Image 1 (cartoon, helix red, strand yellow):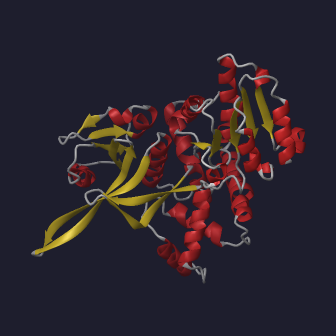
Image 2 (cartoon, helix red, strand yellow; image 1 turned 60 degrees about the horizontal axis):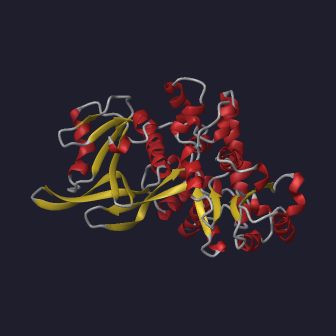
Length: 417
């Protein structure tokens, strides 16, 4: 398998080098956090002249370092490696194996010539609130499964074959080493049963029941659709699962969000400049995991493509909402207030983009439908329509960019074309 390029995250670590903070690498399990730190960043440090002896690497889930899962022994061991006043780099993998790791890391971070990096991925470390344990001294680098461009960089085949694979099996790095469809689907299903569900159940002291798995299946079936805990509870009821309240559903959704399995896109009233709390959309961190939960049966290309675009925008560092544009229409002599949807409102500092995901635009009627909400926004920020076809980019008469999905994903400057 070719080396996977993960330059976005590598550069984030390089930017944070020696910033007096604990670099905390977070993300869904099996997305490549350890590879990023112990291979890519390690090689970078060597390339800029750091001697191997100044990089303290500890893999806390290995038998070799089992003794160091004791917090005091870990702290003592790291201090013993410091031989002079020069900078040392500490890499701790699977740090959650250390009981009380927060305290020992806070202590080590007070040593001026230590630069600390940690990864972790089990039930405790999956919590999004872990940074609070470091009392403001934690600096998070969020890692996602492979983007399409990262996937292509390591895929043995052409771009069209890569797209079909990515669209079906997603971007968890080890998918690239699985040769058959059977191996790929088994890998994804095993991750759910043996890793993700097990972690969530352990972290939240849940009894093993069918609610968590049924919820994931419902969310997988409704990717790209507006929903809320009440609607989901009603779906449970109609499927014969009794006594599951909307409060329970809300709690379980939070567990999935904390585990980085799903992400939530809230609705934003573009003209009113306010958030609308419910309903929301939920997208899977990896479309392969989503597809595996449904046994690869519901392969609605439009919803999967929308999920892939959403994930790409997160990788590029945007805050992403679902946009709402309200407008008045006259029906039967009455003024009626209607809402139109903009798939994604993307914000990053002073930058903003509006994006529509349109699987196919076979005729003018469909094009007008996709443009309708964008036309009514009324501001000067860039508006983009992404389509499935690998077309050459062009612009509508209103100046909206129309671009094919592969060009959008593979060109890191596609938002500014």
